[in-house]
Length: 292
Image (cartoon, rainbow, N blue to C red; front, side, top):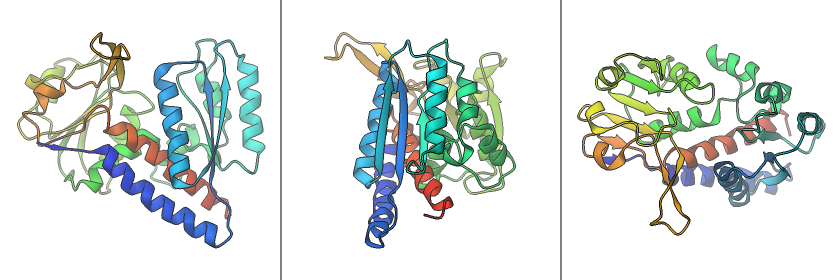
């Protein structure tokens, strides 16, 4: 078994991006500027946003963090999105999900200028992805594909099962892995909570992507010998043995599954860093597309 080390892979990507930014500085060109809107104090969201800000610092991007408490109105968020759309100093921005229940996430996502939508969630960018046209790819699926590519995982002709059909990960990833690209050319089965005979379907897969949001859902008896397993899950689980009082668990029961597979991504240190790296790639592209 070998680890799909997202942390190390992301570090390589950030080094490449830093070199590109350093060159821009030498040439007197604009430095990429990423803004993030964070609503509330959800632990997972705070962790990710802080990691994004840190990545900007490491690469040399400018970054702006805009915070609101849980009670903020939808109108305030919409107005902030409008102002970020119009701010020429901002190349790309994200509104960290999930949002409080009284705010319509789809409405907020659709309000973001597609040219600044570095999370790749806007319907225009998703449509471009489906048609294989230029646009911003969703950060997590793009990160997973890049992780497979940089670890020389052969995907052509392979049976791939994606567990989870979210618009953020499962559905776009199933499309990306089925395209005539490298990585790609998989025969993809998109499964979910209503799938019958899920265990049987997963057990035939050469590549398993677990993105269902259920801690340790995928067990060893669901994985065939030599399969490649990518764990997208990140759930905080109570753990009194930890100083923080919780531990981060993936969707895969790592200790069991790692004994059967050829490659596996850890949690933490797998898909998470790759998501952030993809976001940085999209931010640099957003600025390049503006011709600055």
